[in-house]
Image (tube, rainbow, N blue to C red):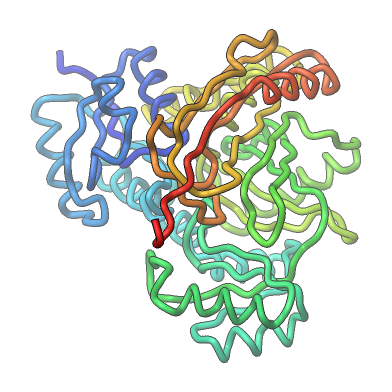
Length: 409
């Protein structure tokens, strides 16, 4: 009997790849990673995973590689990660369709990957979204900002991890970030198109969904503007029954509007004066540490349950317990070389300490999710206790960064 294999496209920077590999092995599957550059995914070498170099932007090349693997393995399922780009998950959907394996609708995934198209479809369905415009040059950006009114958010029409996203509070910041995006510094996944949108102000929430079931709603905080760098996540979010019901209703409206009816989705919100406003619908599982937080908070292992769907098995989404789980991210306060980092692991109540970089790694802040160099997770029966554990853990962390030499040096 052939070995059952799970094909994984690309990887992830913050640990999700490792979670999938481990879960696949627990389910008796042999994980195989297809990547354009396997060396950029550290967990592959650490976990001694089979990795094959292939152009993951080339659907035909992926079909040929998967067909070749089928001579040796029984390919039970195919999935992947949104790194280095959201389009990877759209390719996964096409592969699943080609090989007649369980998976999402490719057209639905592609519509979501284009933030402008997503905005249009949600707005047409009556889903509350920020005011928005599409711009292809600096003149159009300036006109859109004038129509919407400052402050505005500028973001690439395709991408993830807040890459290229910035709050522009005045004309100077608007011109500066427009130049950054259009001036050749920013690396585009697609043709240069900017989404200019209203700054929806209010607390941030995220709904994690499997199929059409709302698994849990979390709350998040970011570092100081104008960037949106993760600072902390907590599950479950401290919501009233009315707030939870309204976020649930809007989430289900998003799924209907975008024809998302299979597998994982995470939807980001801001709670504004008019209630929950949709910032983004991501037709995939949220990256680490969200899956770990959900498992600690309610006992559902979303990674394992997703893999079950991928291989055609029934998933189990029953909640097994209830507690508060929080993750705080470590973000450097300056550029330089990381000399060392330590701490947090021995603090009672800490569930996980993960560093994304190693000693002697160069740290260059970019103003997006790539600035995070690690996270600490704590869990307990109450929000107050979890917050106290997390603070004690962070107070115990010590580290050193040596600034880069100046030109004079």
